[in-house]
Image 1 (cartoon, rainbow, N blue to C red):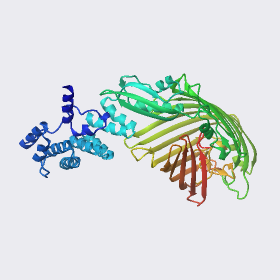
Image 2: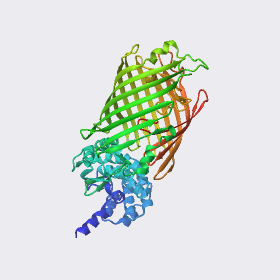
Image 3: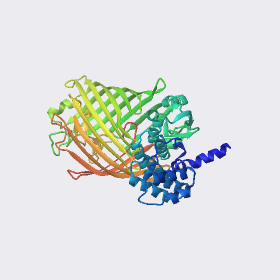
Image 4: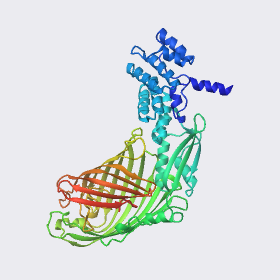
Length: 582
């Protein structure tokens, strides 16, 4: 008897329920509001529909421009029950032409489009229904289920949360074999049998990514009852030299082309303690870097980092330091040692903050052809600085897979040798990221606006640089930051503005290698109050860049850039490393 009643209820359900993803949930028993019959014809057709006389409904409501939107709705529903989906779709569309603000027609049309795998049209119509009737639980459920099927969990949670879903009955960890499960639980930070919110998901993802213990992470939901779900966190560990020798060696040796190796050890003692380091033996720019980072008090919301950075670099400032002296070499050697510590807090997936303290010592030797007035930039000795940084997401549109992130940093420091003294630096950053397709990362488009200003005197190696250098992230990709392998080839200054834009089109991808290619445009302005550094006009570069991701871990950059003003061509390359690209 119970089975018979369930079958009858199923047959009586509207079309969209039949076509929705299982996680969409059933339509409420009293859906908000269907237009009441306004004449005797609508009343008689409703009676036929309630009696499940589908063919009689179709015969009673032939296709006609005189039909009311309600009659077109009944006709479309009956045709759908008869499996004549193309005709049902046409009936719903006719009804919407007569009254575009009928949420029920939009929902039923979305059901047909879902059945036809036209997810983008289905989403558009469901969003239209919610714009008319924001508290429509069925439309929110249905829309969330489509986004979930497209692996857009962020958008799915946005609409599920409107109706108090999903409530998590269990968290199942799969694949996280080396990291302490207690750390994973703390990163998620929710209570079972309560609603899992979008903010909780974003915070968990941000904390887990910062732990750097996983190569891949995937969140999935499985419905257990009408509103209860099981959350599964599926992950793969980062390559470990004990368990994955050959991938670890590939990671270690990824910078050999640049005379660099990366000894890196993740998740030591199963506690997300990471030791990251690099060693570069290039005669022109030797460098040793090493850091430890881990959760503080075994709490992923708080993390610390301690590091050292030692460099011995030859700088060629010919053509960079002003006034220009054609044919006269301008050269010096810099030794610099930095030790520092950083504390970082991730209270939310939408914002985080950090504070970093650095103690730096530098020695500058053998300066040649440096203008007398610029020698204050060559002061050595020790310095101490503190940098506070706030990162915040300004805009998230998960339906469009668009984010706009911001960052602000304030650095205050002092140098202990004259003529240098106290100084301050302010930096701002806006970064947009857009994936135009519903799934995957094809045609990724990024744009970035950054600006910085310095107050007071700083050594020349603390000046901003606009150019491509694997130790620098302020890229003007048509300006080579190196000259004959030595640093100092790009414009330097205490104040700058920089705009970067690029597109990455996927060309090839498999389990081991992914290749993306696309154009870029860079524009920037750099200046210095002293007049010895900077550049008099705006810089413009354009070109094409390839990104080759290997084993899902590290990325090679190969590019061609052209300085629009001078016509100079530049070929550049790099590989993702511990700090930036090296």
